Image 1 (cartoon, rainbow, N blue to C red):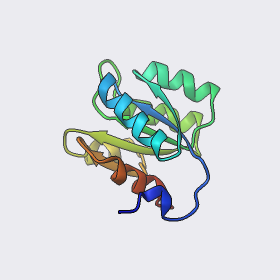
Image 2: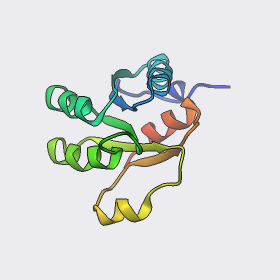
Image 3: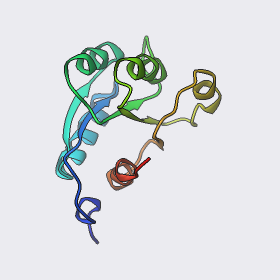
Image 4: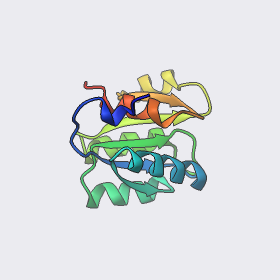
Length: 128
């Protein structure tokens, strides 16, 4: 079976993975690095916003439910800081469609945890 990264050329994308769960963050980072992506991690909304101010990212992959501020709070603030970044939300729970709509957020995609890295890579490689 072919890896998604071998299904055609892609430029190296810079990705920020945000999750309060260290295991999820690390597993996602390592999986994406093995697929050829450049990946940074943040454990909170505050850490992520700090990184977004300092670095240029193509994608932010964020957990929806985190302590203090949610992934939706991050996306709302982050879209103002970095309007070209694409957002992929992940959660062990249902997609919060009403809240996303009420906040006027437009994520590139959503993944339910646990997910396969191949599914995340496919979502990253979808244009649009």
